[in-house]
Image (cartoon, rainbow over all chains, first blue to last red; front, side, top):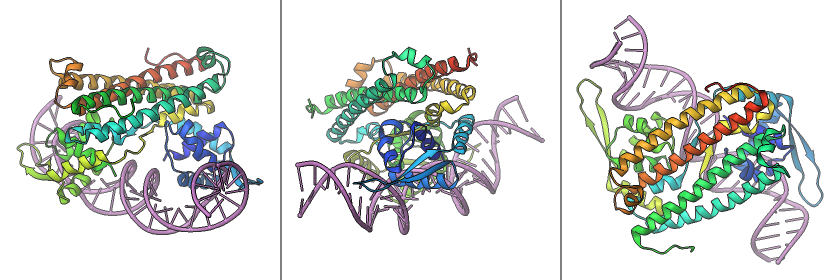
Length: 190
Length: 190
DNA sequence: CTCTCCATGTAAATGGTTACATGATTCA
DNA sequence: TGAATCATGTAACCATTTACATGGAGAG
């Protein structure tokens, strides 16, 4: 199980509620881990029971109360130990790649549409990552930032995320182009 | 469930046993889907019962008999329909990225080792992908190959796999370099 | 005689997804 | 009045991992 580690790592950014976590997972964490809100709520409850995080209720006006969680010392220790343990191989799961792999059976037009849709999503994600990286850097350039002693973890994973999405974009465009030649159809989005 | 689709797609390469599938998943399929042998055996049995693939026992000398499976027409239809359905977002799960994200809690030395280990694996995978792509291309160059009417699916996914591993390699090297500056330790592998 | 490769599985436990459920507030 | 956002969960189901299990052949 590593969802717990991903959650603990996310809390290094500061206190968060389950709802906030679920929202920001997409920008900051979903690049290397993915989870649904239900899972996060469950995991947060477990982590609190085990004392790895501490939660407190924040009463709000004009909106429902929320439970804010912060990393406790045992949580930090769990993370440190996790870093020490051997890593297991990463893995990807991607419908689209399975589909491209099997494209010889037909459905080219639909597949091209999906590739173009994914390309749009990738562009949006690249923009988000660029924004994230710019904000982290502040005024300084990348080299100086990475040599300084601040928060390099989020920056490095942000770089990986941007690189991943960039490659996805290029690949989607290339694959769509190649498939289009096969059916002589026109691009759906220009 | 998309393991079944990944298995069906893999069988487009030709008849295979569970054991062969488990072996080749690493080179050809694990780039976009990952499964353990137990899962493959189970899935193959199910797919045969449902008539999507057909199995036959091949008696061998000097080694155990094996069950060879081939794609049946309903299996091909299932794949075509799968291509038509909307794709769900891809996702990555990577221990190492979680660890780098959380690196501020300590364990830099161990983390650097793991990054270097991953870099070695990435290099090996790039070599494998290059070999795969070269074999698929045969004599022709890439552009000609992709414009011709043969098996573009495996080629395109191979390209994605190589790009992914290349980015992984660069990222591991960069991250290890950045972390090394923090602790002033020497590289473990040169 | 030991190790690795071939070849196939079952069973139990954990992890993840889908469907369902609630209820207040703000904006159009 | 309807939709979106905030905020939190439960229950049932399906998928995946871990542990266990077997057994012959060839290489060293």
